[in-house]
Image (cartoon, rainbow, N blue to C red; front, side):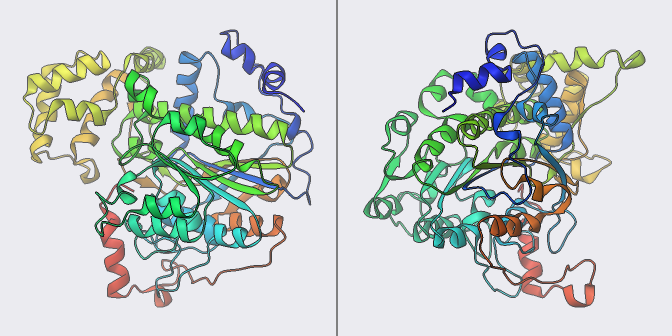
Length: 503
């Protein structure tokens, strides 16, 4: 068996850890012939950097080179033998722009649905989820995320509800369907003190034989022969930039890579498993036009990718899928100065940032003075912002701003524009975008994912690779066929419920 040390030595990642990375790239034994057409995996790991635009991947790669001395593992993979690359259309049933629940549901059911629902068609029919089908066939299943466990992306693989916000119901469905490993945030949907029905869902999980964990230490010592549920925050886990600058968080909360490693140790006890790993806070940072939040979380996601590559190297029967569910905000490093020569210096300022926009806004307060706004920006980013710029931002705290583009009419969007003067990063807005997204596949069965594919193809490929003949019902696209796709009042209300929510 190949050890992690030998893998890192061959890949060049050992050099990276010691500061001597040369950019030679990742060499993967498992990728040499694992993409052969017709091969069938026994294990599947589906990794999602939620809300990652190509600009996010690019800038995170630049930042990784500066703070880690090497490129992202994901970008290094792209030139490796046996690695398959694709573009994927992630549109939903009712829009070219998807939300996360419709996106994940397309993978989790093979059917496009309207934004805001989870594996449910507009006529109310629930779809049978990927985790139900594979569970019936004897596969073990896991969900690992930096968001609430009941959030849209993990839910799309295992739950079916009318509205993605039905977290308490989703938490119950995970138990009903016996998902074997659940690691992330979202205590509020399991704890009797915060559930609306006061039901103690943790007690129900314990009765079914689950080990319940709420700290990093508990995760590290959890028995591998048990099913697991670990919730390490009341809501979402902290942004990576905040985690890196808070020793208490580092003691109590596991990283995505740490959760992924332990999930693989647990699920690896079985012959067949599927694991979804989500870097969910990339999306949240992009919803707030927070460059440092997004790029640091993309790097944290990459560390989870590395854990999966290490596992696959030791278990070549494993298929890895690395992708995103949609773009968000489309951040990018803009050209600045003569010959764009100022751009590198601006981008280098990102290394000085010590807090996410979420923490910065909390420290500013609800209606801060201009002096307080400037103080927090200087302390958190090193940007000695001119007071004239602060005066332009201040009205947005009281919802009195007036941008030319209405989607930028928020404090977070304007703070992102302001920080662009210091970081060189521009944003299109702070909402999802309709981009075709990258997908990288390696391991047995990877060849099925080559080229330009549809989001729903992922489910059907997983079914074929598992040797299962199953299809869910589908409905025609609403935009392309208005006569069929005219929304009923109830369906339209569902979309309205979420069109202004950061999803």
